[in-house]
Length: 40
Length: 479
Picture (cartoon, rainbow over the protein chains, first blue to last red):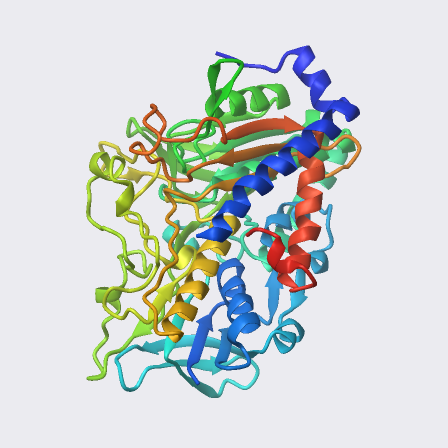
């Protein structure tokens, strides 16, 4: 069981370019699933 | 012309009013009655509580928005609801004059938000107790002041004990408390005071990361990652101690009395505490045409309105019965009366409840977040529009279908801030549709921490203020 974040995980959490990619991915994911509710 | 009255102007009531006003406000009379004349974006109060956001950035006046959207606004506190056919009306008192206000209705939406039941825990709360809260804006401001006073003590070299979590065995909203504790940690690190603070997470959750929704589970690199491991990693990383399975029974000056699953009683000392109270329904009196008080018939014991759910199932059965959760949110006794947001009675808890040997039920109540409340508000508005056009209500969405996205801020800086982004579908596990151990869609469910979350949180603040002000394109923004 994971108990602490590894050095590598912490690096990616703050690496700006990677986080920009995650920001785009997260937005697409959240919008795609949330907008489905509008059809109900 | 039909008269529609919406009680409350929070995430649920305001969303209902905006959809109704925009679509039918010119043909029918839509009225919002609320004891507050501002909309409050409460997810940002965690930042007010650490003095990272000015309180006025989280609110705006409702009336100018409603004027544009064909909605009438009455600034009054509701006291009675008379739901019997033929003479259906809401009674309240005008906030400015104290005069009685009567609003007749054909359709009623009850969405007043929770009653913060500080009285449920002796000594809890900022008004008659010893702890703080971020559940209302005045409370968040008081919390900020108390937090800054604690920081001043630390700057003088004093060690300070900080306790953050839930203040009642049946409290909900652990997510807000989690956001606050990690924001406090981050702020103290920035101020160079972290070594002066002993921070403890004290909660009624059955496990760390439960958040009242039975935890969050995702699939990553072929194995299942649970929020319990994830939040444990966050707390270990931040040096935050934690104690779960504990219900706060009483608070005295500097002392929190609690009981745990084993029935042990303990005391935790504190200098600064922010504990979320139990939430109850607003104490409106429901009166029938004979003048009898029928409140107990229409509400559950906590004061939430019974709607189209299946109530009374024991937890093991409820957890296997997704259809027990309401999906259209109307009262079976008065089908023209709806409950939206936290006002509806859930059929039971989402997380596994526990009663200890002293008969204390330590069980988080189901959270109904802003996203869930907004979705319910839209479903209710759509069904009222159906009814006005002579159709049966055709819109439905239960919490066993809803997706919820939650961004838990862990420092608001856009350069080195962070946040945990949580997506889960559905909010309430549906083990029939998703026949895995967790009853959730593990592909959609998401748990991630990083700077991108801080950007998301910042973006959501501005996007939702835009949406709730009904600015151009607001309907394109999901609830």
